[in-house]
Image 1 (spheres, rainbow, N blue to C red):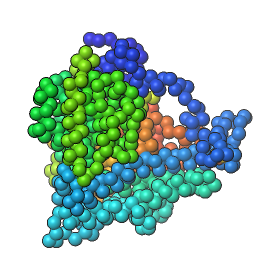
Image 2 (cartoon, helix red, strand yellow):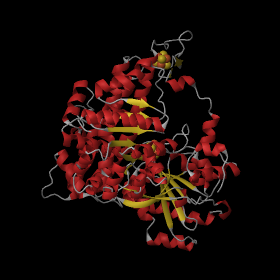
Image 3 (spheres, rainbow, N blue to C red):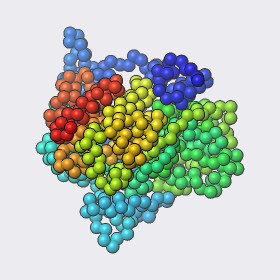
Image 4 (tube, rainbow, N blue to C red):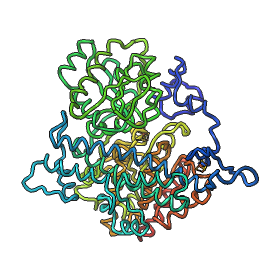
Length: 628
Ligand code: SF4
Ligand code: MSK
């Protein structure tokens, strides 16, 4: 067995990552962990959320100490105002990212319906019919394209809507909708809430920390029940609603004798076509001409999750592994779209034959070749990109190839529809299992990696602890890949669960941890919660459910956590958000919010203690429902 240095072991719990970190060290390459180390100590004001650059009278910083230093910014803003404004801006950025993704999918659906795209088709007519009913779009005697055109236009309108409530908020229990209305936090239009958030946080506008946080919640709801839900639903219409399937994860899915292409970022629009283009006989023949046995597509981050759950495309790894994937020397092309793509990738790729190919007009990267993607010629562009990767195979340097022999099988693709299917057609068996305490409750464990946390340690240990306690886990994003790496996404993973959950999993042939997709697919979790609450005639905040993001890092995660809380879900963060400098804001988030929206944040970096917090919360909710 290989023994690694303590430094390497401290950085990750994943053997493939250990292998690559050692390889990086030996070959003199730096990684995200090295840059994190070089940043230490990080700014204490920033960590507490106590610096403000919102106008040119600043930057201002507030002293966290009682005796010394300024207590107000130049304009007079207090610590709580500064903290609340900054938190709101993080939420706005996160909501914007998810929602702009949703807008792009609506655009693709609209163009496909109008016959203006190449390579796309409407794959899930049942889902389309459901959405048509929800949006009041007539279906009688109409083609799927006609219906899809209207649905896409209705979805588009959700972004620019000025008044009323976002359509999908009607999926929430009536009590929840009434609460949002009473608090005046019902999201009206997706773009409107993001814009108003930026307005309120401009110097001299909203200077009441509570009022700011309430609007932050409204903005986040425009993400969860708006932009993200649009992204999920319309992706299902275009690419098919995920169904359970087997695949594999980790760096070992790269193949030494094939052209390796990695799709990375967040959107399924291009990656779906890359998968199709990689099976094109003419391009396959070209790969063989250059001596490759085939074309192997793998994913990273949420683009990876999208094609993993719909096409069974293996995942090469999660967020912290993106540089390591290129360092294997076996990647002909890494194709990136938007979000979570490190700006360092170009310089890593520059040390190898790897082509870094940027594709979104919104996102260019140093050292990347830009092959801009447009749906009108989607399939042709996908073929050009795959061809460029194949052409690059002959420049691979065999001496540079180093692929860790580590991969794990997994079962993915548990959309709400697939869960209902696995349960025999309704959520009733799940509700009964919860009532009988076979399953104590449900926890959504999601989110990124962050070099502040030993890679995958928070994810894997929290999830293992929860299933041991008969808490069913649903997962998305980088947590899903962390879980997959240790076998938690296999039906056999039920062996790691408590007796009750194990029995349910064995009876249904499902894993104890259900992969529900990418980060926008956290909206699937909201839909599941709403469906269970509606079936029981209660609010989401009454359910024995909780959420956690043990290793989060992105602004999108802040938006997700906030919409979970604003939807009534207790949410435990493993990384402290930059709010501790504002005592009133912190108090509101971890205590007061519960009395207002029925959900609140917890912060706990130790995954075992986080499991205790979640279990205690679930037990309290069970008692509230009169369950054993
Ligand atoms: Fe300073 Fe106020 Fe300007 Fe922020 S908005 S930089 S606290 S003067
Ligand atoms: S956000 S979960 S780093 S992909 Fe999808 Fe990015 Fe992973 Fe967070």
